[in-house]
Image (cartoon, rainbow, N blue to C red; front, top):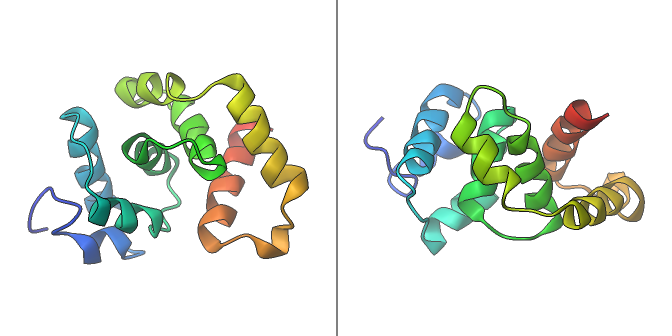
Length: 130
């Protein structure tokens, strides 16, 4: 791993077999309250990570109110071992936003039209909430 930079570690962040290295980078950003730039935002929006803690950290780093990101934040809010993640994630969405995101992915959007990332995030969300 070259550095604790999402931008400089794009290949690592997007590689399916770099779970540990990727999480170290994400945790560094979370622990140090580092804001992401647009290039890093694009990388995170294309990251197919399937580990719940990393999904939650991505939600905090993206810090947007999309339905997908609301599910990411809800996943992060359930984390029991990473207190900073759980606190930051829980304070980043409302119950109304979560209900809208849940309804969107449960009823409104056809599962066959889910992107790979939406499939992963909705699967992890369902495992934690149902």
